[in-house]
Length: 106
Image (cartoon, rainbow, N blue to C red):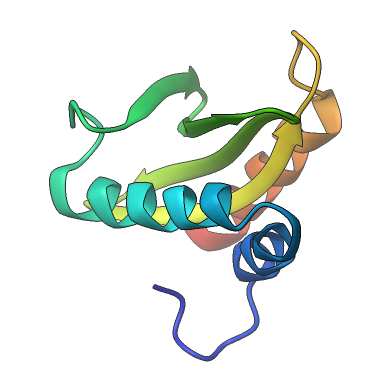
């Protein structure tokens, strides 16, 4: 999924695997489904957030785990991951994903 390079999403999922291995496995599976079937897949919960960002969701007992991604020239770019525990998405989390998308677009 990420190769051997360090990646913030790999770190997030690896840390999650220590405490919530089933959720980490679901995230990995959903990332694979997103890559294979795209955002219209019936097997994943995915929504467009605007400004080129999309989110992939997996719910658990501690919150909703989100992977924010972009699509550039047909490629899915995994940008950021976090656990959402409140109704509103924290501004910092969206800013981080937007910044990473802009870095890739250059």
